[in-house]
Length: 184
Picture (cartoon, rainbow, N blue to C red):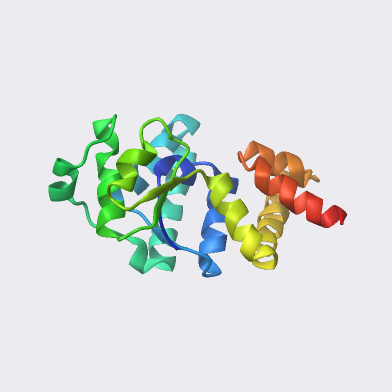
């Protein structure tokens, strides 16, 4: 599966780490543009200069880890697509240029399924994408989630319930599936 990651799903650290970790395991191929990464970095500005510098460094690492993920700006495609918010045309243009299967975003309102379908592209929120991937590759997804969970606990200096961490990352379906499996 080829998926464009919108800036809104790259911004939250836990979610980003899970998505990138699952991509690193080969469960999907991620795509983005400089503009998408710039939007993410600029969104961290409200957290202070240190957070912004950290995001800039992480963007460089993502580019290095996934050199094929970078898609150049596509002004010719942007000019012909229609979405409710013109500021999102670049995301759809990246998806078209990358021959992506889907756009992963929380922004359902500005990426109507019927308009994306005209381009042969689906829209997934991160929870449904990760739940779908978990359904087919439970061990791989669980391994990534466990690694991210361990890192979050190490950074927090305390135990963090996995269910709460995943729900805070807006992944309730994945949390329910994984915790349900663990209880079995």
